[in-house]
Length: 313
Image (cartoon, rainbow, N blue to C red; front, side):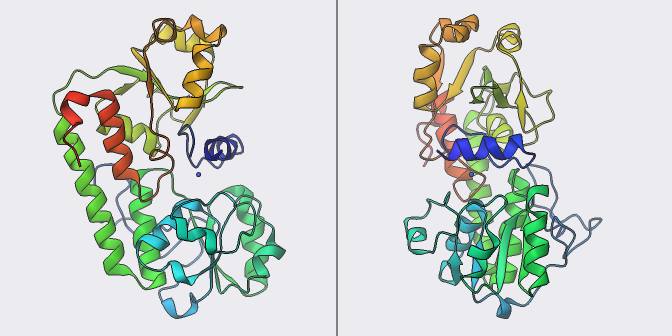
């Protein structure tokens, strides 16, 4: 269900996730996937819609989060009790179910959001959400719009939420913990023979993980080579003929998609499908650029290199 939402977002220009089943503040965090260093050349305190990010947590007493990744962060840093609204897509952690469902996170129902009497709304920074951001601002509701697609985006979002919700130490600890896990995965698969892989994320049209997303970064961290790494889009629309021509060693997908591809006559044009070289991903873990990024890297490394990654926590 969540991958359907994610690919739909990508199709309308707001890519959130390309995993099989899932889904800015320019505050000085380096955008490289492997670095949490501060880049002092970038402006601080502006979100991805160019609006100032408040630094006083006092106004954030009643928060509506319209981004599942941001919702996860809020709970992970101990600020979930501030949430009075969330999207229909939110499913983690379990405690989120007690928060009022206000509907979709893209092109949200502004009236439903306002019914929760929010003092702050967290938005996914897509062009499709600008109208909602403007409408909320007109009635005096503070809005912070964050685009969370890459691992660096996640780091930045965690630090911004820590600042505006009053959980900076917890946010720093969360980022450090995830970075530590990612480094352990890199170390575990260092020097392995990297399989060439394709990661389909949608069926019609055929869409695959390209570059510029956390999924692409996870493939590299977990010891794989993405055959569509030359595509700059986080989620790239391709043809089966293109996939067959690039001849990946492995095809990665969640259990439902793997079962469909095994039975699909058109997909048999891809040699990895014909030969049964399909890797089933743990979609209960791998889903969105949220607090499970480290666990996602571990799960992916275990699937690709079980001999190297089996001992990872």
